[in-house]
Length: 334
Image 1 (cartoon, rainbow, N blue to C red):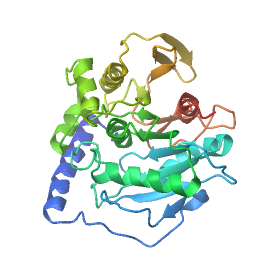
Image 2: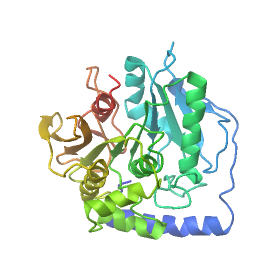
Image 3: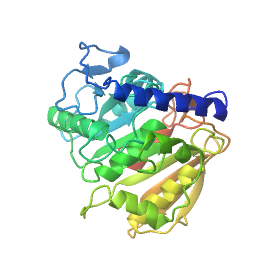
């Protein structure tokens, strides 16, 4: 997450790396099960959702009278944030009510990472069948069974560190997620250790689209099913996760889809946003990139009561455009 300057952020990141290594050495990553609680505003904690190798907590929001066969959206917070924080600011509950889908919000904490970041950079935690990635998918299985959700309409979205984990989940589990939205995030499996993480955040990796695509194809070898559709949100003034990451994400997922890196169409949206669509052979957008001019590091929101307005401003929730509305439309929820 962005601090006062890129240099101060990098200093904190280095401290986080050292503390994370010390925590692992001291065996401080053992799972804990706090007592059941309910957060404000209808967000409910699920104390037992099954196997939890990543030591995450599960929260959920379920609209009244949710019908069987409804979609499911998983939303991942950023560093220094929580599930309740993301629920309160992102605008997703508004669209859960409007369009009728369940919302699952995984939460990590300081026991896993000193800054409460999801471990998108740790190959023992962000790969298929392992760690936090496996815990998130177990939450999906629990929710699908509990609500009778449509297993073919499960989507995932996340901000910053949650965006990095979103990209990893889409690569690891294309058989679980029909689509995803990566907000100020990183390409799938850009880093395989904490020490590589800052390099991904602050600079390009000079890989070809095919090399980026191979990282996705290698995450679930032998997979032959449909690939998830991917939305990418990025501010042009983001100095925490540099805009080159959006370009690399575009290269990665267009290559996976077997389509070119020249947009099929572009249009202007509110908040200085440019939407670039990359269509599949059938003319449907497989990848979309939303570029917000002058926006820093955070999730774009647009407070208000209009159909395309949502969320509230706060730390890393920036007044620009309601990304949750456009993402829900991209997912085909509305």
